[in-house]
Length: 320
Image 1 (cartoon, rainbow, N blue to C red):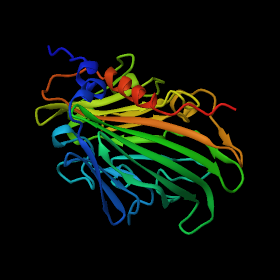
Image 2 (tube, one colour):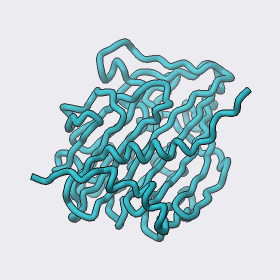
Image 3 (cartoon, one colour):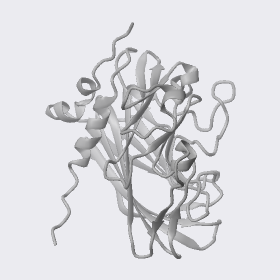
Image 4 (cartoon, rainbow, N blue to C red):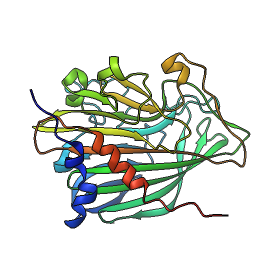
């Protein structure tokens, strides 16, 4: 039996590798998208204008060594399941019920409005800040705004995407409803899916859809073997979020960190989160993209610690 390699040894990386040269994060501007690389190797593509998917998202996500972690986009018939081709492009944040509108199923657009801070790369890290507007219909009235910061931390052991968003209401209360399809989603590469031989694992060691779906947990890792590498993605909700996230996971390759779907996922009391005009609602997630040198399974707990380390870099709130 393969023994898990310590995720802490494998990852940190984010501390120990500080002594070594860190991969250079670069942002390559293309029409409607930003291609992200680390020392020339692909990390992800941030797409903010697309003819078929009316919301920003990441596609073509990779781990170190060019190991592909997200499903082909668009999926390739005969090689990938082709379900939800326009709903599961790779990595995305959307909401099946936000003030009655549905951006998850592409029925209500999320539109890129501007770069608040332009993409800026550098040794070991880079970042950009966007402002998005939420509309009920294409060209319709704006009912919410989001300012989102994307930070990319690159090490030889893996790539961390730290996502932080602030939402404000524009037209009356902003109400986050209760559905499975709410929050941050990731569609893994077909070989990583449980049906393809991969595994889902949470903080407590629960496994796969049967053991993890509907559980509230600090992190969830979806991984398996690709081209001789143990590789995958860990979804890690920010501990500062208003509540822990439940995980909506599927053996066919989907993982969603969802802090809103209490009734949908647990049959508990219905969740309803109301943001009043003038208030700000914050939501954050980490996504650790990993690929080890061997096919031996690893302990993902170190990826969680790596994200917490990144969060500790945040400036302390100003004292009154």
